[in-house]
Image 1: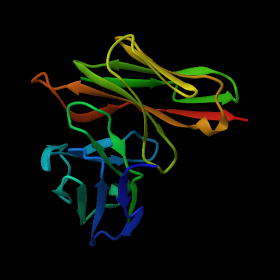
Image 2: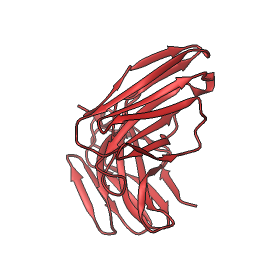
Image 3: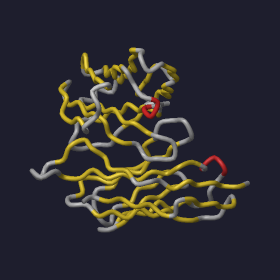
Length: 113
Length: 115
């Protein structure tokens, strides 16, 4: 069982809605990540948080807004999304950003109507 | 530009038929090569980390090896439950010589094991 927990598992939203994806880990990891994965494609990095501070933003549109309230929690706030944003959103954590493997959650399947 | 290429794209095996998956990489400053397994609709499950040429890791029917240009995931006597997409990813050093959290993934190999 994964030690990275994501909620909700499934989310359907309209283009004018505001919703959030949540991620939690209790492994004491200091780096957390958001990845986006489209069908039959590999995961693509969106954001990296290191010690609760945003360290990497891979030129993600502002309709995606990450937040790291503490070292165990990571949120992704969604607003005014487009249908092409429908995808599996994966959260991951690692001990730090420079070494160690990433552990992924089960993902949140997002559908934008 | 850092590149990771996996082959084959898809592999069909009979139960018990051993084979290997390939991950070729062209990167400037490797800081780790990772193998993951991903089941449909689920997040990637960590399998192995390899850091330098000659290193080997094993887990049940899987064995990962690495050279300076490629890594192999060897599957011995596979079972139907080994069917999944296998992803290879690399962490590279940035311009300052350190590394950061970005993993560059290959496109994956879809493995199907028939009973």
